[in-house]
Image (cartoon, rainbow, N blue to C red):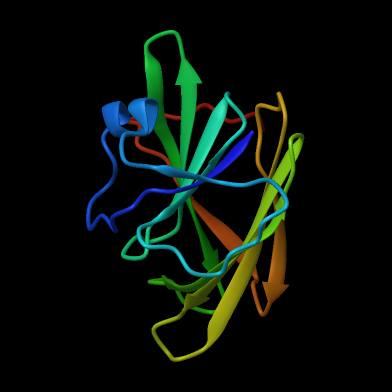
Length: 150
């Protein structure tokens, strides 16, 4: 488990190489919960890395596989409208077995919506909890096709 300050704020999605190597990233000591970061915030359990970029649209989820990390989805809260940008990111939990981050997003109409994202050691999923007026989460997946059970 680890929570990281990437050192620089990226205006674009992080390449898989950057997520894998974590070059220039600073690990936040366990039990520390900073609310200010020099760069973007990332947290990982070794199987999933979640990146919250200051200029990003939401929480970017990278799955670690045989060939390294790959972007799998972007989670964005919806509170009546879309087009959110993060305005506050706070580490809520930072232990050897779990990390949780509270992210607050500015909606285009001026409202704010938040979500808590939680990773536990060894899990292959991210737990989400709505905060405030969040009605749903938009899940953007970079793929051409999806198969869903009916």
